[in-house]
Image (tube, rainbow, N blue to C red; front, side):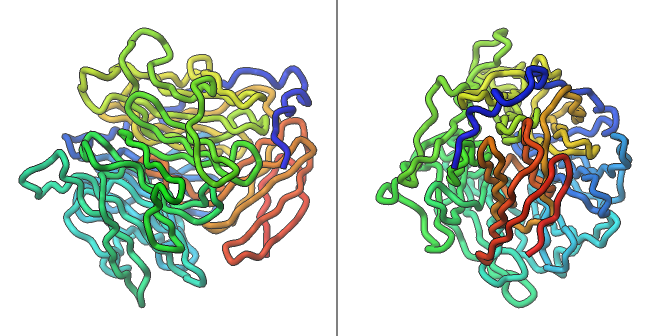
Length: 486
């Protein structure tokens, strides 16, 4: 497949405009993620369409503040939605838990997790007991899911942070993680050990092309003996050095995965305290650290007024200007008052260049705020083909931004693809590959159409590989949402 290095050369000069966002945070009513040490981490946001109007809604964790649902009324107007009152929420992920075709929410908490069943028209009920996922009074900070062959309900992986009942904690007191497999009308719980305090989990194809569960773990609490983990879903085992996995030690916070070169092997971004680590997929199915010249370490506040290390949380690849090159957003913020780390730490918007390097543009885009950010998400909230941004902050109001970048390229969105589907969009400028996943980010994720920037191209060949291995091929015009069928 062809790398998109020549793409900008094909675009009119006017398309090289800097990204620009317009602040609409007042639409979210000042919602904040609050609480004590159990809410130093978390603060995720789930983005999904719960009423079928193709305009995604926002569900935001609140910590000690009740979680909130915001209904998308169009025109960038949002109204509070009805939701069972839930406190202690660290984050949530949208997915179909019961196989009825309607999106539900798996809600992570410092305390028993909750399954909210979608009833349609943005109505939800607490169906934890009815849906049957095992729940205990634990501290859930990571989540992902996948569908086994032929299964109508997902297999869930749930990541637990510090064991609050360990009298010798909190350091070196990481709790066990769990895999929940659908059995009958409920789930069977299997321990996933050892646990090293994960703050993000993602089930996705790895550099080998195999479905793999990745766990990004917080060294602050495992201290020694732990590392980043990879668990082969098919073989049900952790990868080791014999598999080419070296398990770097990080203060891991979030995971983003996307193929940046069109070769079908996804790169991975891991947020941390200090350096943010991008892992480049290699031809032999392993990873190598991106060089500093790549521009993705984001290890200090880029404004230069604080020389202490950054703390990265949610990271997400997305094409902000629709030039066909995936850009990278990173939410930043001190854990609380850690003196060795930057306090006023602006979020990053790293725009990918034709040579594969990344350049900071958060300041010119108008989103370089310095509150303690946590979760975030990029989605087209107004249906204009440009990806907008929402950010959850700790003890500060949420932020909502409309993408008003001028002279963006063409785009294509693919709707209705199930988790595990792999989509390839090819134009004369090259190929882009994305997988539909549930998980990753920091404490929240999206269930929205896959978005592809197309630059100056107006027509694309689309190939969808469905989870069962069947393939659909079609041609599509730009600037529209397409729903492929088998």
